[in-house]
Image (spheres, rainbow, N blue to C red):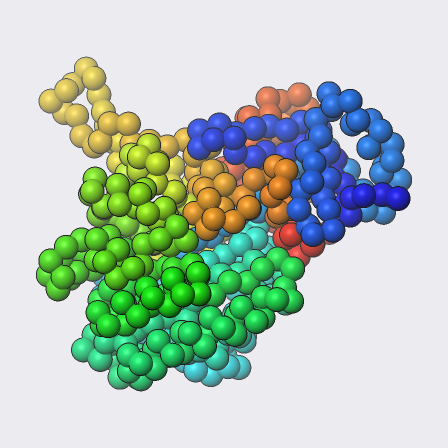
Amino acid sequence: MKRYAQVFQGTAFTSKSPKEVDCLREHLFCINEEGIIERVVAPEAADYQAILDDYRDEPNFQRLTQGQFILPGFIDLHVHAPQWAQAGTALDVPLYDWLHTHTFPLESKFSDLEFAQEVYDDLVSALLANGTTTALYFATVHKESSLLLARICASKGQRGLVGKVVMDDPEQNPEYYRDADTRTALEDTEQFIIEVKRLAESVKQGVYPVVTPRFIPSCTDEALKGLGELAAKHDTHIQSHCSESDWAHGYVQERLGKHDAFALHDFGLLREKSVMAHCNFLDEADAALFAETGTAISHCPISNAYFANSVIPIARWLDKGVDIGLGSDISGGFSPSLFDNARQAVISSRMLEDGVNPALPAKQRGVPASRILINEAFYLATAGGGESLSLPIGRLAEGFAWDAQMIDTALPGGKLPIFDANEDLHDIFQKIMYLSRPEHIREVWVQGEKVHSRA
Ligand code: GUN
Ligand code: FE
């Protein structure tokens, strides 16, 4: 008469707040049939020993061995799934040229379901192997292959939020790659939402349809307004790009006479379940609007270095109460790893802060108080992502999904530099964040199901 489907015993790290990481030494994690963490039990708890005695010889009990640690699974808030096929290339051209000479030609090929299957299958596996348990995806304008991506997430056990991309403006998009017209764009989106919701009925970890205007420059006003209405009608998530580069930000200012944030809001596209990528050029009023509407920022630090030449002041917007998570922006960002993106988030923030030198005020460069800690980057990749999506994910806490990755720091031939069995746990946490590679990610679970193993 055991009540838990699984029990894990080991040391884990989870965010307590953006700046604080909880180091849970030798805790028990009791998971129910639905894949939800029902209890997190500290060694001091009265029933710790009783639970341990009850489960330790059962097949559904797992004790982590020396050098193994649990982190929450990562939540990637911005992935262009088709662009996996060009990851690592074409990083030397500006955004507009990159879209027209590399990205649109590639994405247009996803009308071919066989090609889509090959790329999407590989990407979802690669993300799981990198510890990404939830991903918010842009697919392409094609309804059928966007649906295929949702099905692949469903069958591989990843929690996928998937958008059929809308690009209906014939003036802005090439004839070979756009929606046939505005009406078709809206009808395809609605049909897509209905079909993904139907698929979701049989998917334990969840798959979700996402209303996805690519960015304001690719859509007509009519489409943007219609998409806002569809999101409200079907209560879906919304994603787009917002104030990413000088060019994109300037285009919207010229066309609509306002910043992206206010334009998106006027089209009904900023709501609690909205996630906007990049947001490099938000001002105070834009950020206040994000905080007020519950709109989240997907921070894409690697991509921003290449395509926006910009560092978003994350510390400032976190302080303002804006929800923020981390995005790889494949392939604007080259890496499928949120470890890499978390590191870059810290590095970029240090460059924004730059050479503040109290002894030489005249030489002060950069923006004071811009730096973020690795703790905060970890928060963005986990708990912040969960809050951005309004889902109970990203923390190892009661009521949250068991979405987790086990890091093996004692991998033969690839050991992390831990030499003291009693090393401070926060130091170990920092070593994991800075030095882990995919081979250290030994097992990955989503909603209690094992989805990746290097055993
Ligand atoms: N803006 C519009 N489309 C894209 C895209 O695919 N990637 C990035 N980084 N920015 C965009
Ligand atoms: Fe993007």
